[in-house]
Length: 198
Image (cartoon, rainbow, N blue to C red):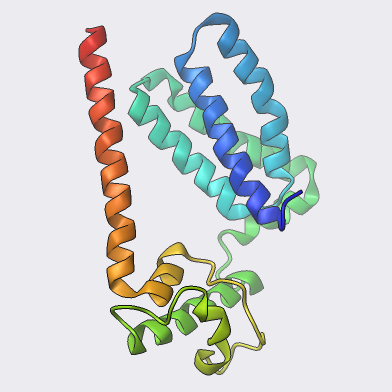
């Protein structure tokens, strides 16, 4: 029902983080239900073969443990990493994807670097306002680096490069401020919750 498996992987990573939050923070029956639901979500996430979603989930889980202040839950990060490694042994294609995460000569990594270099050329020519929303795809051939063989791309495979190429450093600054506001609010709520339960 989604346009591409990578979008599904992103949604599954967020769903699995929500399940992990319930496992950490909720008591009794709710925790057990969340744990049961997390298993098929985790399997589906692994089988998308989407490395950035795996990495995003592990980082998100680590931040979740810090935000909820449950030191005992640090073990969940280890469980998540172990699940990926076990999956890599049981399902050979997963092993290839896991190993490729550390391979700088992997064709998909090389291609992403070429996309980023193309985006940097756009940013260099249009630093403040960018080339326009949805325009990196339209102007790709004009800026494509010489050793990049693809004729077109849908996006830059990097939020920072995509936003800066489209909207310039002003747009990037606005996007970063959204995240600053989000985390400021999040940790403010956490501090208030701690005070209320103390």
